[in-house]
Amino acid sequence: MKVRTTLAMALAGVWLATPLTAQNVPPADNSPDTAFVLPDAAALADFNPNLRKATAIVNGAVITDTDVEQRLNLVVAANGGKIDAEEKVRLRLQVLRNLIDEKLEIQEAASKDIKLSGAEIDSAYNRVAANFKNANGTFVDFLREAGSSPQSIRGQIQGELAWSKLLRRTVEPQVNVGDDEVKAVIAKLTAAKGKDEYHVGEIFLSATPETEARVLTDANRIVGQIRGGASFVAYARQFSEASTAGLGGDLGWVRAEQLNDAVAPTVIKLTAGDAVAGISDPIRVPQGVAIMALLAKRQVLSGNPDDAILSLKQLSLPLRPSITQAEGEAVVAKFKAATQEMGGCGRAEAVAKDLGAEIAINDAIAIKDLPTALQNLMKQLSIGQATPPFGSAADGLRVLVLCGRDDRPVKVAEPSFDAVYSQMNEERVNMRARRYLRDLRRDAIVDYR
Image (tube, rainbow, N blue to C red):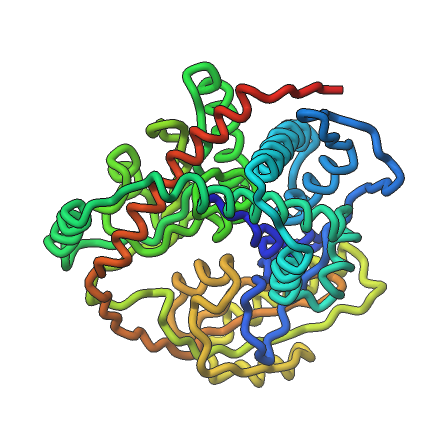
């Protein structure tokens, strides 16, 4: 079932580009509480809370221009504000389509006497807010600064919960997965033991023969944005129609045999962790189009790079508030030269003293606990090497030095009957759910304003 409730998690750690030439590295919402304080800032967007112009009326239910703008601003914020005006226009159309689907899902659930309590919506909203981590304020503060609101998040949660309940009541009972089917899949997976495994992300966009051309065009634009630095996770959470949307498109670790035959040949040829070569072109699949991302690759019973434990030193250099662009660039250049040439962790303290920087040490942090951009960077470093400077004028500059690395072996459990059954059942429910929503769209009366 499609669950997008965790969309707002893409908003934690939003990053604005700064005029300095330091490499900007976006912090993640799951960063551990350590001495490393990674700078972040909220994306700003124009917002008029008094604007209530109707954009579309779906079977009598109004979608206002404010509804669209607030949801769109979440996508823009999740991508660090790095979306040009032309792409923003295209995204606005997609957001409107999503809001129309949301209204249809809520209306259909109501017609089947599916009820949601305020407590259920509050509970889901509070989970989202509790997981939000931002040094610059609360979740509500962030939403308002981004040009959105708690009501926008609650509306999305209402749609997701209503649709999920509806599918459990009306669709799941009609889905059947036989024991022999499950056993056949397990046998196939067991035979693949020792082969490569892939950590995969997906974005699925449904399409019919009539809409395929438009969907392919949209998919190509999404690929272009992601390869240009936009967040795959944010796009997956907002636009994917797969059940993994709520997880930012994360399929987890899978073997090629577990992937759809239409996407497997493409996935195994991608470059793991690469912002460009790790993202596929749009792929035609049954009932739609898929965009795949290869996040990492490993062999069963070998070490998982994401589980490696790192020993790091961080050099932090504050910048005075009145620093000019030229002065900032000079400081960045000096900081970079000194840290790239210091010859390892042993000289970090001396270099920090010369530069007037502070030192913080973390001897036990897993790569997977770092922000995504830093994860990919740290995998490429050798012991003693330092990252390029990153940060902002407001938060200062930072450099991480890799002092040690402990690669830990991992043993992947054999696939269980229940896990395989659940996956197969979910896939079939999703397929029926997409048909269900397609029928609702076909029968809906939508008045665009």
